[in-house]
Length: 141
Image (spheres, rainbow, N blue to C red):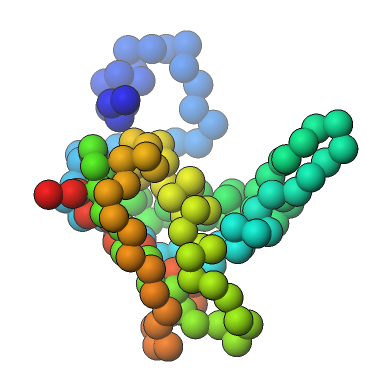
């Protein structure tokens, strides 16, 4: 899949965007700061006769994090990539690996083309720094 450019969208007048998008050329490195995502264990709920659906907490975080990406005018990384996730340690005990999937899913189609293009993930806790998570996405070598 190739990322759409502004020229591609302008050539399709029938395409309606719900929010304005500011396009940037593909970069080698993109860094963003986001609100702490819910644990992957809290992202899904079982609903009778519907199956697994996104939980309310996950939908709220996803909407907020998308707005944060737009405010930071996050660029995009084309092709295969590596990601470093640094999360501010919280008082509540959490598994660091439970933060990875919601973040990769959020970035897919916005900063990266597809989360399947991820070559390497590194995630860790930080005792100092701003609340939430810092995400560094680099084009894979």
